[in-house]
Length: 515
View 1 (cartoon, rainbow, N blue to C red):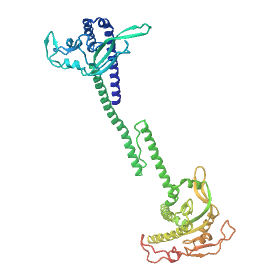
View 2 (cartoon, rainbow, N blue to C red; view 1 turned 135 degrees about the vertical axis):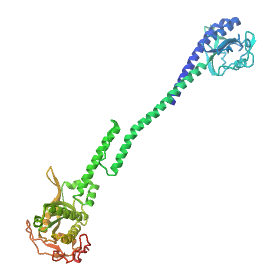
View 3 (cartoon, rainbow, N blue to C red; view 1 turned 180 degrees about the vertical axis):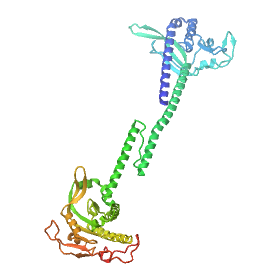
View 4 (cartoon, one colour; view 1 turned 60 degrees about the horizontal axis):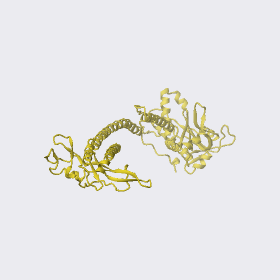
């Protein structure tokens, strides 16, 4: 706005200056046209009257006529204050008649024509300053104190007094008879400039104030919803995915608010999905899958890969459950399955499904590790030790002990999402899975029965006992099976002194210590 104001002031000033220049040129040329004959006849009276009449035009400060020698051909006419008011009156400087006047503009003597003019913005000329110094100005023959010169800048225009003719050859020639000098007051220009400066300055200040107030208002409109968005981001960072922002505007901030609420809902859904997913697999496996979902998505299409299938079932649980109230059956199963699931998840296994009191788990899918077979057997041993601890607590409370049979097999199986369009289940199918299920039926309470493929991969870490070769349902080939050398605990085999619930359990028997 400041730059615009300066440009406006300069434009108006130039326009005023051009107007003043045109006014002075017209005045000077009219004076030059009228002064031709008096200059040729040396009619000083007429020239004086012409100079005086030139001051009747608004804005004129002085006018004088020079002859070819640069002398005043008549008394220069100037405006002077009356001394009573701020008005000005015409004064004829008779003392300058027929004297040389020092002027700012000097016209050339040759190659001139009646269209020539020269102009200049200047301070009052020296001869005018001399008239205003001392008690030299008189009115009706009386002396009066010299007034202060009322003009700071004057725009002077000079035009030649020319007579045109033709030479013998028909060529146009011109002769300079003198010069006309007219001074135009620039006070009107200065006043107009100051007024424009004040107006533009006022508009600028008003515009700046409006801009500041508008900026504060706009800033408030922007910052308030942005602060709410910042608060929302903070809440999301704290895990509060239920936080929502109310839409207050219909602009881009409002659109951002809508997208933020969508993001919060999507994040909540994602967390719920992750939480649900971690209920199927261990946290370690879930984290591995979520690191690279694309790789996991490929496995959902169905792949054939080696996995370790794990089945664990409570022996005789049907007869036990028939003697208990339904709520106790459910409470016990939830407690038992939670403890078993925790152990499987700690060993990076995946819960495939619960079938009543039977657990089916897989190791090596969907994420494969280098020691999945070992972790499957380790989980089985830890589950038997956990069951032993639970039995101690149950017997201490007067409840019946329980025993679990576990079967483990290692081999290729098809892994992927299987089911209908309404419901899918991530599971494994194949002969190796069926074999693990059959091995589980061979295991008595407290036993861990494994296939020969499992034995070969873990025989250096666990102590096994050979079992008689068996033929399982659906297989013609005789299977070589093994079981871990592990004592089977019963009511009779527990010591008479049973530690209280939560007491320190005995270490693993030496026969099943992990190497």
